[in-house]
Length: 125
Image (cartoon, rainbow, N blue to C red):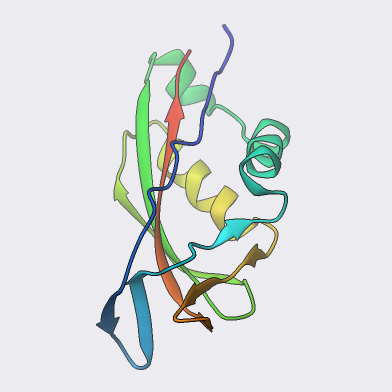
């Protein structure tokens, strides 16, 4: 069995803010990007993603959606699973996002800002 995955494209986002302790933007003028862009992200996933054995054995397939914050330094925090599929896939996505290299931060009105991201990762046997 071969594990296939893809990173669903992030949509372009525009000006809306959600306030937490300090502003975390849900929509920005320039979305955060992984270093190396989408090609770099796909390379990172290909090298680091392990299809969990329990998921493989149970033939679990589907899309895990994670949310997280990219801060002004490009560091990832507040990783959560918005929608999971089980079999260890949810934990694998959390690990991948938490361990990902720093991102290029998002911008709003020309300023670098904290941005909440939504990331779908598809698991397919």
